[in-house]
Image 1: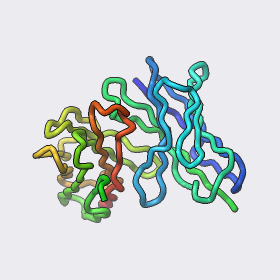
Image 2: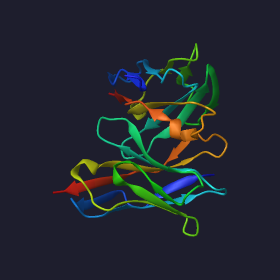
Image 3: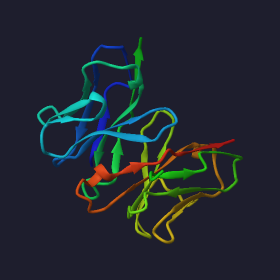
Image 4: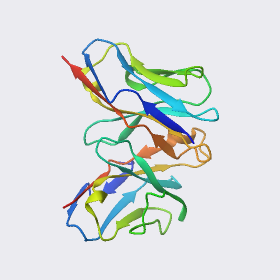
Amino acid sequence: AQSVTQLDSHVSVSEGTPVLLRCNYSSSYSPSLFWYVQHPNKGLQLLLKYTSAATLVKGINGFEAEFKKSETSFHLTKPSAHMSDAAEYFCVVSDRRNTDKLIFGTGTRLQVFP
Amino acid sequence: DTGVSQNPRHKITKRGQNVTFRCDPISEHNRLYWYRQTLGQGPEFLTYFQNEAQLEKSRLLSDRFSAERPKGSFSTLEIQRTEQGDSAMYLCASSLAGGLAGAMSTFFGPGTRLTVL
């Protein structure tokens, strides 16, 4: 079965410093992987998606993620954090038989300090 | 607003009462999903519809839960005899099956937060 593991439940950074949110996946096939962001009292928003094309995926708001098959990882990065980046981030893998059905990690809460 | 909408946004109920939530998907979307998110966890799949047919139900969906999508448009999720463990955020999402972007076309609503006292 497909699954994702988010290695950090909380990450704190200072504004202007790099962000790294870590995710490992488990899948017996080439997966579709996503990062979603959830701001308080707002719906889930797709940041970026990997579907076996380019291994480095660029998303919205300056985020990007790199698919590394050898490490079964799909870490999310951003060169410079902004205060508005503070939110909950979810690493997600799609179900093999139904690619619209999403399997979420437990989330990483990102705090950004001024 | 052409996004996914959910009503009510918040619901507080007493244990043992029945509650019903509504989801209005994006109008041209033929798939509709329900997820449940408890505090500190990621959303978990509950069930999904393609048009009016309910095609899959999670083991998380006990007999007290029922979902419908009678005309292939809006959907309702009913919980009977609520328990404190049902307290969670209930999320609805919609997508267009067969769309070129696949799950890129999955959009989430803002959720209904249920509190069972």
